[in-house]
Length: 243
DNA sequence: CACCAGGTAGATC
DNA sequence: GATCTACATGGT
Image 1: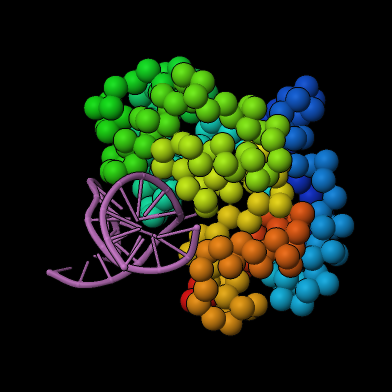
Image 2 (image 1 turned 45 degrees about the horizontal axis):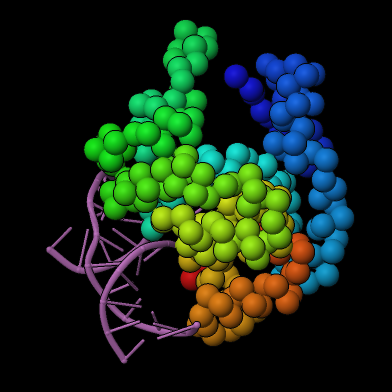
C-alpha cells in the first residue's frame, strides 16, 4: 500500500512503503515523474492569467491512470458529486474487485474487465449510480466484447481516439477528453466541465458561448499543452468558485 | 421543497 | 448539425 507525502515548495516527494522495482515499473510513470513541468509552466505562463493559475496550483501533475478504470469512473462522474462518485466506485470494487489484505484491513481492487463485462444489470444497479448504471452495464459489455478497443484507441491521434471513445454509452465529449488526458497521454485534450467552461469564459471569452467555441479557443490558445492548461484553470476556478 | 452535483442521450428545431 | 431537457440519487 503506497504512501505518498509531498511538499512542492520544499521540492520534496516521498513515496514510502514501496520498492525500487515498483517505483520504476509503476509509480514513475503513474506520477508522470519523467516530465519537466517547469518547461510546461514557463510556456503557459506567457499568458498572464495562466501564470496566476499556475502559481495557485503549482504542484499539479497529470496522473497516468488505467483507461478501463477511467472510463467507468468518469461515466459515473457525469452530473454527479464527488462523494457519490467515490461511493459508487467503492461498491463496484467490493462487489466485483479482488480483496487486498493490508495491515489487518481488507481493501478491494477496481473490478477487472471480465467481471463487470459479464455482470447483470441488476447487480450493477446496486452501486447506486442512478441512470448511469445502464451506461456502466452497456459500456462494460462493449469493451469486454471488443466492440471498442481501448488499447487501440490509445494509439490513435486525439481526434480519432475521441471518435472511438464516443461510441461508448455514457461517454460524451467531456468524459472522452478526460479519458484521453488522464489515461492515454493525449495532452492536447481540453475537457470542458462546468468549471472549465465558466473559467474560460470568465478570463478569456467574456461571454456565454457553446462548448464547441470553448474547445476551439483552447486548441488555438494552448495547443498541445491544452490539457495542462485545463488542469491549472480547473483547480483555480474550483477553489475560487468562479461563476 | 427547490435546487444542485466534475454531462449525456434522445428528441427537436 | 446545433440547441433543449429528462435523468437517479443523496445532500443542503
